[in-house]
Amino acid sequence: MRCTCGRTGEVHQVRSLARMDLERHITTLPLVPARQQCRDPQRHDCREWEPCALCEGQEPLFTLTGPTSEETA
Image 1 (tube, rainbow, N blue to C red):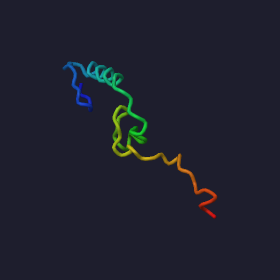
Image 2 (tube, rainbow, N blue to C red):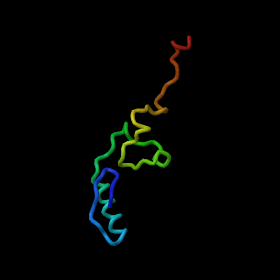
Image 3 (tube, rainbow, N blue to C red):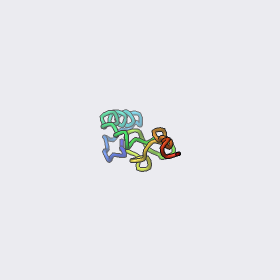
Image 4 (cartoon, one colour):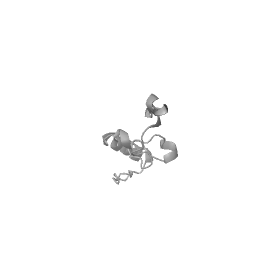
C-alpha cells in the first residue's frame, strides 16, 4: 500500500489486503478544508482526501451576485 500522502504500508501478497489497508488509512486522514476541496476530481485527477491546487482559493461561481441597482444606474 502506498498513499499519495507518502505513507506506505505492509507488503502483502494479495492486492485486496493492500487495498483494504489503503482504505483504512484514507478514513483516518483529516478532512480537506472546504476552500481546498476539488470541484471536479475526475478532470483534475484529485482524490477526495487531497487538496486541489487548481480549485484552491477560487471563489465558487454560484455565490457571485449581479450588479446592484446603484451600479446599473
